[in-house]
Image 1 (cartoon, rainbow, N blue to C red):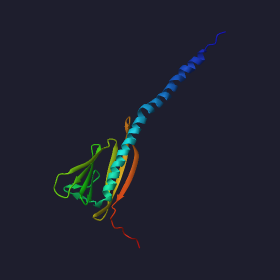
Image 2: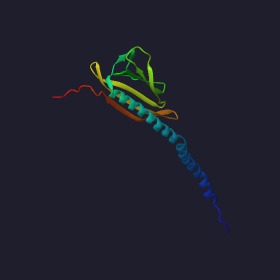
Image 3: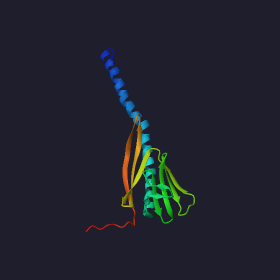
Image 4: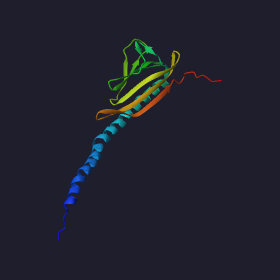
Length: 171
């Protein structure tokens, strides 16, 4: 007698095969789409950390954090840092951060760095006591774009204090 499959066994296989293929298809979708996207976000986070390191070094060398300088004012997308050799201007626009040196005179601005961050969001604000700013608070996050919506990933907040700012002593 020959061994063969019964009709019931064939029908069960035909019914379960699409479910199995749908599960395996999701694994391949994750491997082909989501893992490369996540890797790109991690690489871009490295660029954001480079920008933050430059801001930290400039704040460490800062004399003050001015509210405005030569018609430019500090806001969410613009940061001014006054150092002994001039003012450093950071601007976030069009998926990139630019760093420009504004000399003490009326000379033209000198570009000093540019970082591409198309999937990142960086904005900052000054901490102040009266008219004097003493720290910069920087908020960052990465935008992971999925089919119809975006998700915030790797969100962080950093605070950089002026080194020479006098501290109040509590009694």
